[in-house]
Image (tube, rainbow, N blue to C red; front, top):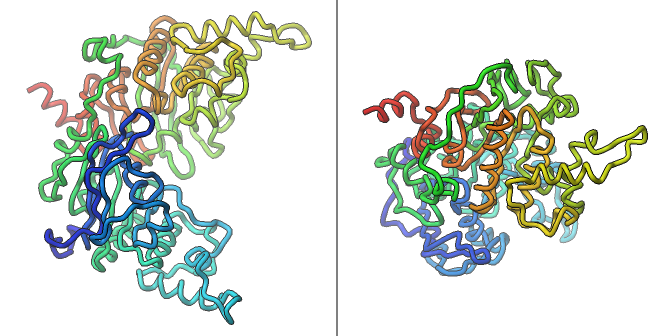
Length: 525
């Protein structure tokens, strides 16, 4: 680490070295000739935008995925990782965002699960388990009660247990994936102290994060992945946020951007009663006094890094976070937060991030999926009989302009491609003609043509029907192309806004720690 450690010996042989790695999923090449290494006592940060290949590269190192080309060396010996257990035995461990601990077991039991010391050759020596766990924790500077059940610990302490467990295997290389995404500022400090402790012992750390401030604090070198390719490692002393953000911004452009001049979206003049108004809108752990307004005929983007609270904000507005509090008005009418039926009944649609689990009934027909949020409009008579003609009309209305590729309205949703499934999720809410449509990562895992089709349909609804849209999208080029305004969310708080015609690379720099005034000034020079 830069703070206080001796300089890393550039001549020291790497603990891990990955050379010219290639990985394909079907016909798609997600990693192209990628190289990466970790030296003793260093923190090597791995940066890249959404879909750049960071997780895939690390899963190859851990044996979750096999390579389609390239070579991997651990302590100078060429290896072929085949599974997580084999990688652990070679001294490589990964701390995932979603921790892999067993919540109903104690701290000590989690650390030594499957490797418990035995008494008389067959009985678990529980006293020895507790004593060794206590020694390991103390050796890393922590005094967590070893008998406490993991589910009762704060997230930060669970993370420590996971790291100590990895260390108990003799891991010399630790991969940390967004390790601060759920931590408070004080908990972050403890994590940074632990990282410094580990590097002083000669461990190597792979640090994956979008937060440039902590990267500049803990890293010794930075490697950037973009479009499946790796940059030359950058020493931290030479790192500049603006340059890094430019390198992270993908050169790939969507069909919609190719078909239109840059920034061709008409910036609409909107007025009247807001489609959505939030004041002092908060949740217990994530959101802090959010104030925002979305007008009819306006697309407002929410930009933020992983862990900023974007998805929580979407779910809270949709009534899916029970502890949400504050003022929420839809079309000028105040409603009670945390009540999904109240919210959706007032004209809000919600396209969730996980379309298969939360957006569709996979084994039901397409027209059934589109009719589900519109039951009052497709039933008639005192018995509430579903009228097939109305269901078909809704299907035709919702899917118009989306270029849905399907056999017909009766085809099960699960038989469609991912892009066409997402079109159905969007269609069911467009068919309901809402005041406001909330979209959480609507184009994730969707091909370029499907992105263009959905973008065109959404713009038409905004233009012709006065639909208001709140958009979360990690693809910054898409956000800049679609949105009238972009608000910056950082750790649950709205901290500012981006200029209407900001470039994607400039928006990336802003999220990584730049300044809107600086960006705006450069544009006018």
